[in-house]
Image (cartoon, rainbow over the protein chains, first blue to last red):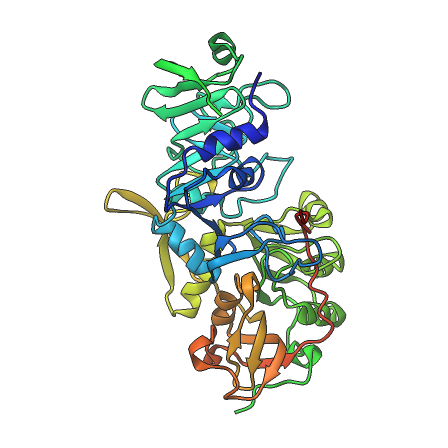
Length: 218
Length: 232
């Protein structure tokens, strides 16, 4: 069985370390906040100007002035701090954020990522994604392994306009966990019930299977 | 010193067609609702708007788009707006998409009196096209210029007659940057107070950057994505 979106988020949550400042993108990355391991304390950064993002508010307690980068109503936590957009991207640019998790349309085996534009079709914009991928040291992509047409999203090179170059270090998909290094995608974990043959068939970019490859443990 | 104007209509009275405006806000959070309504009423057009987002179909800058008042948008994210997409694909509207941090920092540069800054975002992408690239300590950076605009329009929580501003929660977002960047800066506030009522330790935008201020009315403060959790 391939991993569900929640399981992808759960697996990524295992990468969190105590004291991390973390920026979670929209979609699957947002779900990571639901699986922060016990005994670990992380601070979530929302690039519209908040460190210490809390859970969604209780019904009736929503505040239009308090939202996250996905424009969802949220809450603060003890120790939270608000700041302006220049400060927000200042801390991102200066490498203060320990881990960034974001979605992607395509990832290339050299670490390039495309996630902001489909020429002639979708023109929503890059938001903060280009700033995040350009600056962060530790970027994990959370996405489905293939697109709706069943084509691989792990490619020899991106076909869509790039968001950033040589920046992605790890990809977690419904099929497994992949590190990116000079040899391309290195499969280090496979989803329960998913075969290496299936991963090979659905990965268009260069793929190496780690000698000690193991099943994803959730 | 008294920077107070009566209302939004008076505040935007000399905004003319063809001008460039910088607007604060992130999504619909912290947007200058009153001034946008006054600009829509005034009917000026061919505007260039520098704003992180372009509102939604029937609120925020979306209201200006509906009236075809905007010639060009400079933004980082313009989803959630069907009319925007229609005008863009039909060629009626120009759009320049730039990374969000670059947008904030270019506005900041204007307010800090810096003509340009070297930024990392977008190196190796189409954002870099035509821009000067320079290597610092083994990394490439793009030369990004400060913004030039006619008016900046921001929304704050509290402000005093001298133009000192305090924002609330994440409604701060781009507002301080835009406020600093305007040749003429208009601030609309939820609560206008007398000088001395705001603690000088907790003012976000010093009044020197603000030229006109008024207390707004009837804030709708629309929520784009109402998300809640259930009580156990």
